[in-house]
Length: 108
Image 1 (cartoon, rainbow, N blue to C red):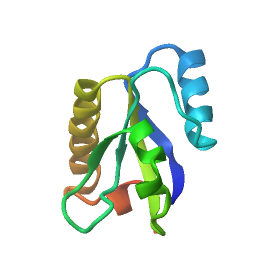
Image 2: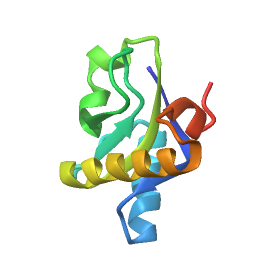
Image 3: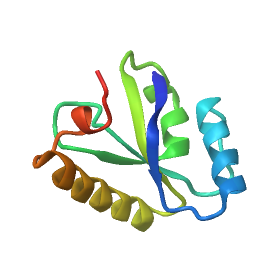
Image 4: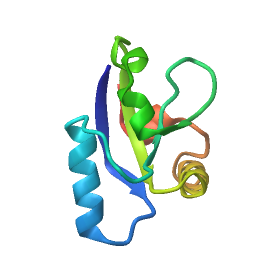
């Protein structure tokens, strides 16, 4: 599976060094010791967004998939990831007047 990090990724992390370190690990597909949750477009055509434990995506089941996985949010907790989903939906609706992740993040 090819993972890509969108420009303008959403995060609830306040420390820039920690955020940069975690983004680097994600870009290199390296496991992280701390809990890390990512918000993505859905792998299948059901739903708007999905939340995954990042280390779960490194398992062989996901690595063998041929799909591209766009990471649009990153958080150190599942509750934080849920808040990110809420913020993305609010921002999409404010900007577009509808819910369209592909258009909002300019993904094709």
